[in-house]
Length: 338
Image 1: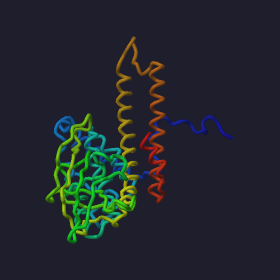
Image 2 (image 1 turned 90 degrees about the vertical axis):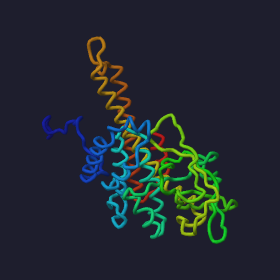
Image 3 (image 1 turned 60 degrees about the vertical axis):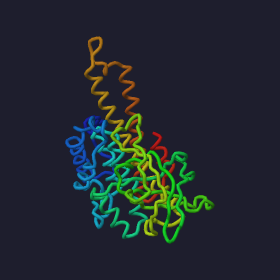
Image 4 (image 1 turned 135 degrees about the vertical axis):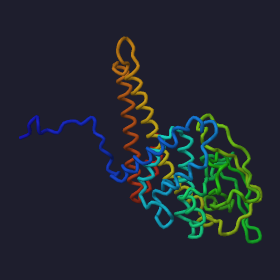
């Protein structure tokens, strides 16, 4: 017979983690948070004026943070997808959304297609130094007339004397001014529909690659965002990433993991905003008491906390499905929206 002493009681202060995370993830979380707070956060305001410097990539490569889920044979840590979730959540403690974006493009947008679809030579040439922080990557999808509509891309590559000649432009390219190479989405067969796209690995120092303009933005000023042009850029056959004509499918696969990482980072950022607001509400006094004790304010906090937890659980459960081989595009899109 149950008694008042034996009945399980609510533990409102519990810090119990979600089942997808292990003790190793907790240790990684503490390590990344300490790095972000000690080595990055002190420079956040300065970098909003100047963009963050390249040494951040080098340092994170030294610490092993740029290859958390990549195989050890390429210099990675051999971890799981949840390790990337941890990085997305904790790098925000640098207090710079632009920095977090630049790192995420490198770790979860530009380099995953190289691991998945690249040849061994491409992995050694691009992935290995990227994991070490010696090469910086960017991803070229968006164009002045084709944003989220990947099918509307006009940048094209044509065969000429045993090489590919690329012409076109890309915009809003994160890391575009600092990158050593770009994973570039092009159209190679204008009449083949979705089967007419091909990915290329293009070195940014090749003749014809023009970093036209550093774009000014309303926010994320620490992020280097570029307008790029490709004028008769010649690349060899071994610059093709994956299969010719299958670039659309390759990049759509990549976008799903990227969006989930972005959602995790946003939920983490929202949590930090919530915590700071709560701290303020418990310090600011009006009419002789802290405003956080007024009923209307408490209701607002309860509503915000509920939305945050719902978003977090959606991200974590969708991450579990994605890491276990499913392709939950609908839930990933919901997580991004939330």
